[in-house]
Amino acid sequence: MPEPGSLTPNSLHANPETNMRTIADGSIWIVVPDPSPAGLESVAVACGAPPAVVSTLTAAAQAEQYESLDALVEVLGVEELPPGCAADMRAVIEAMAAG
Image (tube, rainbow, N blue to C red; front, top):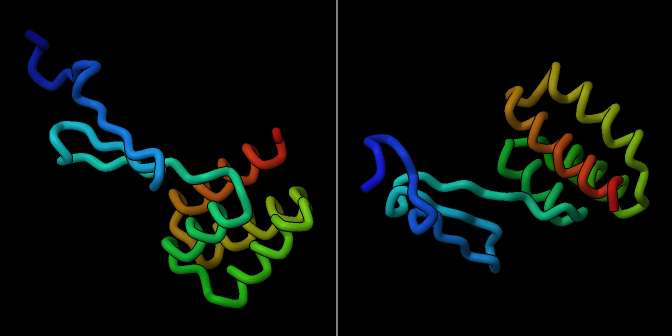
């Protein structure tokens, strides 16, 4: 029997179609963004980035302009995005750049 507050290997449930994992019988949801232009776009939309910014991010991701993407997210993170969103977007960009 696990300690109170601990998770067992059977407590993690994954849905590969949505990149979503749940723990604690669905009480906690973990969304793992897809390292692709579409994945970056979905994070940007979920974070409330303006549509023009989402379009710019998506176009730069499709052109594999990772340095430009990182600079744009840096500016957005300071001006328009919650810190967690900027970090999520950087993680997707880094994963895309790593290939």
